[in-house]
Image (cartoon, rainbow, N blue to C red; front, side, top):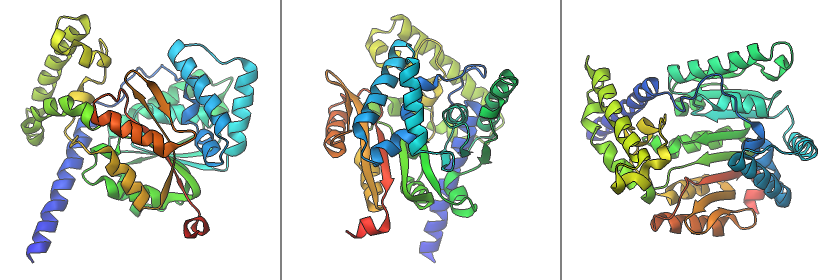
Length: 363
């Protein structure tokens, strides 16, 4: 009886955490970029399902070439010449044809448009906790449909949107299997990350790939200390004046961040300039109600327990630059974890896992 009480209390606390997150993203939909901005797909070919499948098929040199071209395009704002562009698109579509299915877990406002542009003909299912987020994501797609009405209307086919807790949806909805699952910036906010990871693994088809991004643990300690200042505020989210208090504190943070960006706060200038002058990331970085801080190895070890095979990882390390695990992902992962421990990890790491076939797992 005591166990049932404790279990019920634990479930209730998890539900409260989920509800706080829903409130948070309804107030601060992320990333809150203007609806008319459209991603440049050449800079995001590494997000394509075909990129992960190239690595899974051991076509690593070609995947590495794609990574280099996309990184240069993103960093230098330069396009890819037509010959390389057509070659890359052809190869990606060959290994990831339109028959393959895509799941976006915690899709945010940007991913549905990005993945529809990357995959014009694939079935895409997008899940998010926030109604406001999904509304903005649909608005972006509608704008692009309208903008390309007479030219590329066929490239903006419908996406299935599901509102709610991703773990519950993946367990209870008859969604079938997926060949590619994207889960960026989501797992580290969950009350119980393992169970969402397990739900995604169960939805992966054999040979399917899971691409995740998780927060640095040691590198975000200062952000988490700032977040604790707002814990009591988030505990009062049922009160009438809750939204007023939230926005009041948010404005104060935005002013503080602007002073950092302009160089008037030397003590924290270098640390928080990454948020930008008019950033939509201030609330996400400094006010998030569910960022408990989870070690990087927790996610990797959980994935291994579920039978997933790490086929790639990457992270940017101070004084070294980007480390990419095309040849030896485990070795690079060890470097990333070590750099995080020394607070020298400059980006949140990206990992790609493959669901091995049953006969492979038995070998």
